[in-house]
Length: 337
Image 1 (spheres, helix red, strand yellow):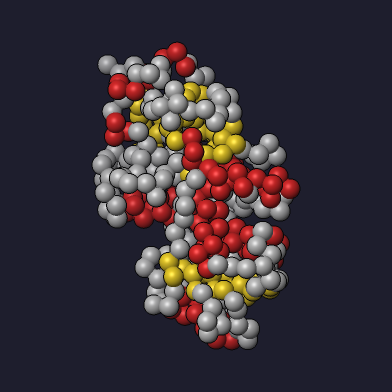
Image 2 (cartoon, helix red, strand yellow; image 1 turned 45 degrees about the vertical axis):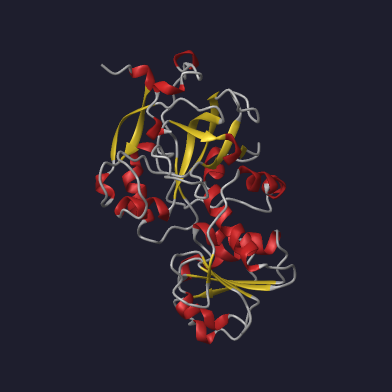
């Protein structure tokens, strides 16, 4: 018989397929390894990546799988070598280290408790809600990496394809308020033009009314967040870098840009987050309650989300740390860590 005090509620799937393969059920609460934190999740965010690996076996993973990369929450226990954070600290981050060797964690962030290496998370700024914090990690790490890959310099111009998406909303803000772009132009649909302008874009192109060929300017950087470089390349200067965050890029001239997963990136952006120069964008249909994860995925997969699709609140209960001695790591199946 399972000890209910060591079980948690989580969304998981045991086969690839549509959102209907997701189930809400019991899952073991993990014990943190020496360099890990056990975090009680307060909010999480969905990413297109979560849907892609659920639908198809893109990467090797063993079932059951709890989806989710992004979270914000409270540290409730930690391994013996973890020293950056204390129990009670509020943290946020992307728990899936895409840069590491081996497979991704089977226990993602759509669970009450997760384990994460302490160098993958950062302290949550006091002026940010858990929901805003959860909306940032993977998207801002991706957005930032694109500018670094391109070698973008202060004073240059940039054309951003998909300015209202999870990565696009942050790319617009980073370009204008962090990297010092002299001109930022972004695309979006008619209903979201004013929203993208509010993020700092100097001009917004309504893709439903204007084709790429009709854009008269040429830019120092084309930053495509939706994988449309086969067509969007025409707005780039002849020698300008073309960044595509989708794989594989649809244009041979485009350079794929992934992401570096580390809490240091979030820490370096802390001044911009505290000052409000950089803000999370949560789709106005949310946040979605933890019990409504399938509905949240349904909306995410329409491709119409404005900013991030966020899950909150999560189930709330008192965590009994004495039930989880962190020196007894061997008691937990390694595949869940």
